[in-house]
Length: 406
Image (cartoon, rainbow, N blue to C red; front, side, top):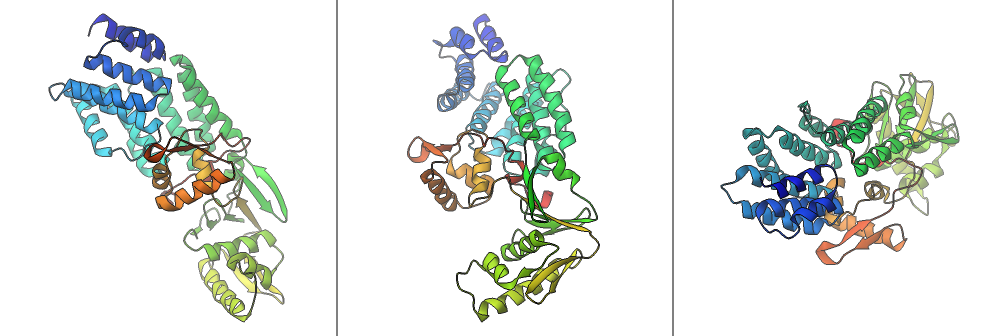
């Protein structure tokens, strides 16, 4: 490694891309192309960065497997920053194996971190935890330690473990300060602010108030039934009844819980669950059927009893019933939650993260754009969507989470 390449690498490690470009901006050899690509990524020109890194990988050729592997890892990092979640996992895994085989433990750890972060964005928490199973090398740079701790905090937030998230963010803050990279410290500060912000709304006995993630965790009790409109489930401390695939049953459960301990008129239940403008005997018959199905689902937690004017929720062992609602509720809240990180997203990446079809996501994006809530950048296949962060609210409870890992 010549002195100019070494100096550029030190500048990049210190978060100074302009200084790095001063050393290698006019060079076209493989190491210089790779460093220029990383510098452009740090400056935010992700498309140019991706092209430079691919050129560097080709220039190194098959005889320089270690250098090519590092370029692949850098390209994966650029793709992740651009919220391109479709990049092939196998190529990153192969690059990580090459790095480990050649003794480059630090870059191998960084590759593992990138894989885990992608899994976290997709809501695959258990897979993300497995990717982080190995400890960070003791001699790892402060920036890598900060990124690892941020990822641990992200998983903890999704799992409603605020204390674990707070501890991880403290570790991340110390490491970010030690790294001297301002953008990394800003990312930690943003995560800390999100953890302290209201994460949901609590509806109980006709009253509504904002609650933080720590307050959400404290709600869990054997004596309290929670109708969770963030995860679409009904639960207490020991039992969870998922209703994400039964929207009518969940709508009925939520209306009954919001009215508890009072009953709910049949007309109200029909209007909320079936969204019908006119009510006739067919709606009443369907309501009886759906109430029977709801009783079967909630049999371990509560009963649904008939009253003179409608139905009421009757807990079996609990003394309290509450509804945990999203911090803001609208038709496309999940799309907004993903985009609230301030990054630009493609419709395909949003569809992949939400587990939805790209066409339905595109319809949601068009609707949000018509309302002025998001804006598009670019045209055609390069089109991306972005929005400013949602002020005053954390969106952890709106983000996708695999039901199997709840």
